[in-house]
Image (cartoon, each protein chain N blue to C red):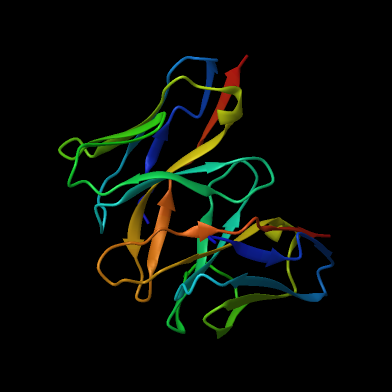
Length: 115
Length: 114
């Protein structure tokens, strides 16, 4: 099973709201990723977790806060977002063999609209 | 991050034809080049990838060709079908201090007409 699940599928929120996106995988992968994808653009990396070690993309505003409760779960907490943050948020996971890059498996994404 | 240069931006091919998408990279941390296929409203899915100890990899109708000296790789879709209509992304890989980051090209929107 190479499935990454994401909830919710769609989310509409106001600029003052606090919400969370959730991602789960049961493939035993030890790396999990958040990407942001605007319409007709490629996915752009936001965050990486590997063995609970966080790597932060420098261009990610602090209104996005990731959390990795365990190796199977990844959350993205959202607060005080702007309309330009509206996008498809993709979660991915991969093995970490440490030798060479491993395949990243993507979830279906959460379509976020900020009003 | 240096972006992978992908072309064309869009492509229209008749059913049964050959679709060709090209990518060029500058510097990469790893010799690993995946292609992802994305349908509207879905996440990207790995289509095929090459680790260039070989110059070509074929899986069914999909072939990756790799030219290390030119820093180029391409995707060929043989006998293109309407179901292949999707957006295709090439990527190379950069490393972070805790994982591997995919650097995607800008994408190619492929339409296969009946």
